[in-house]
Amino acid sequence: MSNTFGSLFRITTFGESHGAGIGVIIDGCPAGVAVDVTHIQAALDRRRPGQSDLTTPRKEADTVHIQSGLFEGVTTGTPISLFIPNADQRSDDYSHIAHAYRASHADYTYDAKYGRRDYRGGGRSSARETAARVAAGAVAAKLLAHFGIETVAYVSAVGEVEVPVGYELLDLSLVDSNLVRCPHPETAALMEARIRAAQAAHDTVGGVITGVARHVPAGLGEPVFDKLPALLGQAMLSINAVKGFEIGSGFEGTKLPGSQHNDEFYTDAVGAVRTRTNHSGGSQGGISNGQDIYFRVAFKPVATLLQPQQTINDQGEAITLVGRGRHDACVLPRAVPIVEAMTQLVLADLLLRARANRV
Image (cartoon, rainbow, N blue to C red; front, side, top):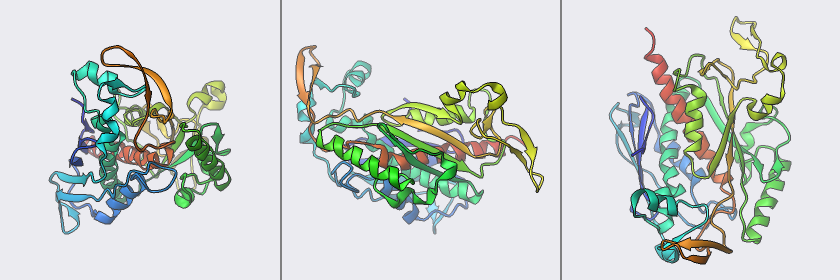
């Protein structure tokens, strides 16, 4: 089973969409890290359902309960247990798929793997599991902040609507200034209109989230299999609905000749090693080089549609199925804190591993 992520800073998540709740055990967080429950709750509030009329109307407070690992607001070095109760389950909304395989969902593959499945909201395959990751990421963020490392993500595309400039030209403090979580106000308005059009058509729309990590020291990454980009790619591709990951120049970089793509080194006015460009996305040889780490994560359109689709049941019979329940027309706004959390978890783990690599 693969419910655990990380090596030294390690998390194990548990729970299902319509069970008692969602939770996470964090093992390996050093003692002495100040963790405020309000910080964890603020991260969860950015991911929770029902936060605006652009998201699913399921109402979950996502109130986090710290069950162990902290004393007087500081980590003790022992396992940290966080639990988030489920409060607004409507399992009857899913009775019609008890024996049906929804298009592009995990229904068939879970049956194929386990011979049984929890069909209520997708069970363990539900994106509700990511609440646990966001809670753990908030703890990791406090560890990173101790070393001056900052992470941020934002919606850079919804369908065909894209932010026209790179992250360097954006004021990333504006990410939460609108419902879409796009720091480019003009594009954010177009994105919101695109999502509302999908809602009105009982359809869904995908998009892209850009992630950025700043002030990351050089030396993070564990060649050869646990390279920084490899772990970030694994982390992002483990998020529900993610279909693509690229770091730095990504696929566009393949269009440049090497003479233009290479990042030339120099020393700045204070003697720090820098690069004149950053096509590498802050990583060379799988190890951070001290420049900004930036990447893009592609999310597919939400699979649940409130319109008829052709599929089969678990007897192989052709049926017509119409989605029910409460679902997002676009997951991008709520996925921003998830991308941030997975970035924080990767960097926290690699930071501890780097500190163990040398005297």
